[in-house]
Length: 475
Image (tube, rainbow, N blue to C red):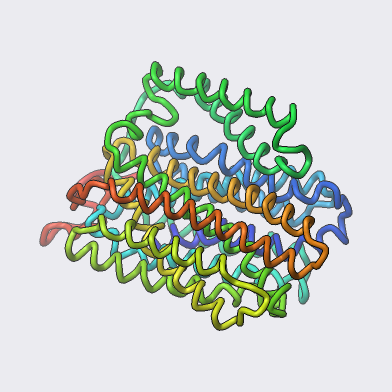
């Protein structure tokens, strides 16, 4: 019951981008500013990525519950302001505020799950997280289309208000965690350098191949800034008392960087496939654009079913190493099959290929997150959880940008429109298959560390006769 409130807020941030994307043409028709359209999405993604680790660290320092509530409140406030925007500039500014809240929701949700549910028991709850992802991916376009057609594009944002308020009240009343009082100086230098690094990476991958060539002085300049900010960030994190991203979580146990790498690959594939599969089905196979959310069912339903089953097996046996290996292998096969599609491939066959990919994603995404969190100390759960969400977000941004560049080059290189679409999708899915194969090879190096069975704030049953809150003071 506690996690339902946490997941409701997480669903809000996942639904938002899908709903807004569907409403974009109507927004432009009302507010104008077509040349600034991409910034409505870019600024949201950028701010979310930059603030994610900041929220995670603040949760470690000042308490996860108050930070999560603050993030939800900011997201709701940003949604209300977006719904009242009268110009594209105002909408972009309010989307940045929304993105700040979304960064805290993403980081906080996984950190709260880690604090409430020990890794050994977490598999029982993976179906809940997978359901949120499936509902967000499938329901977002459907809800966006309905709201835009029957109400107004402003309701694409205003619909977040009642749901967000319910989540706020729910979490405030039902979530109880041990009190945290950590006195430490905030790593402002690390936050600044990290912000520069992520900004340069996201903008570079978004604009590269579009606003400027990949081999150009602009791309080179951004590359230099990225390297310098990375070196500066690492130097700062090594000497501060409470670093934004403790380097020990990357060097303490090899499971963490491996799991993060798998999550990065899954982020690339999830958003890349989510963008270009419906496009292929609509353009080449003649599917209806109004049902774009339903087109993803063959991929998202296996994610839900497989992640739930795998989670229950992990909770019952404590074994998990095989899941990311098999999952990445299935993702490789699924992307390879999708890369073989042509203009004569039926929707049924495409659906079968998507199911293979979805099964692999179901074994990888949630399981890799559990492996990563189990590899760090409890004091670093917030930083670890924010890193998981960060690399998933960066993977999505880089995946969409790189896939977009490859796709556009293929389409522009063919006189026949359909032939260009087919060749473009074959190219991006082939690249995706190679990335999944690398993730599969990396997963073989995961060490099966026993999963923790309890921790502070856990939902484990209290001793007989003792209430859940009797053991420790709560915040």
